[in-house]
Image 1: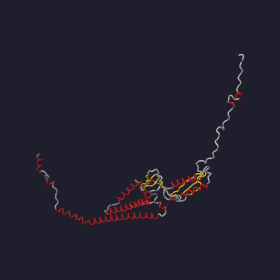
Image 2: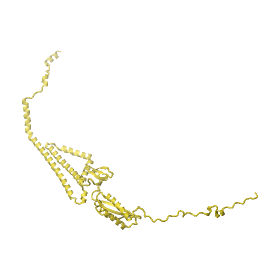
Image 3: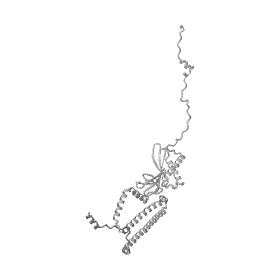
Image 4: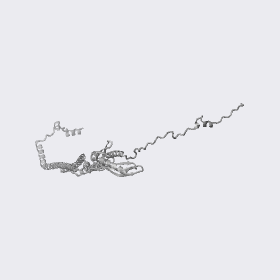
Length: 366
């Protein structure tokens, strides 16, 4: 006990901090504030030229990129407009005017201009962004490596989208088809109502709308470019006069080519090509004509109509037509094939009585 009593007074009670000293923050003096301000001013004075140079460089890059982007986009727009005007003035013939109509030129030019403007903007802005990052002394190697890996991953994941986009770009640049054309795309056929970079819309024969991905199209059959052929097979009997048949069809074609609106749809004379086949009871005469694109079926129907009426007027028989009625003979006597009545059919006739059996004699004794 004496030891502990000796130690405790020697150590003494530990001083506890007063509440006023722990809660009140130390107030910096005026000398400390002046020193901090002088340090900041010295740092700014040492680095202001560097930051000003970086800011001016970034501003210059942004201004040049913006101006270059505007100039390139306007140049592309003017180039597309000039191409459209040149194509419009160069369409001196009816054929060239029908091949590319105004709506088709407009949509094609808009699509091409949109693609070119997007590519130019991407290249200019992307290059400017990389230059700005390089101005801040940022290491671009990891960023470019990450972008390359991400691009490869996106390319593998969206390869169908990339294929559709590239196919659409080349279809528009090569002018394979346009709005209003009738095409056969393999997977679907119909009239083109919209051409996009990824999807082409077709209006089918029954009114349905087909959405065809451009990457899915392996072949394109354009039925609206150039010209079409109207072919009609006229089947007549084998005993008809071929010269008369040819003369009648030629007269029909000559009259049809001079009437409205067939004179605009027909781009060539209606020709009788000759016999397509000869059978025992029929002959097939082939008739052909060059027509406006997409009007071959209309011309074929009208030509069949006119040929049938001309054949009826000329007395030319077609296969399957009514037979020419023969002269009516005298009506046969319905009793001519009947035999004369027999004399034995009457029981009172001498023949019947002579042929009747003699009755047996009766017995008188009985």
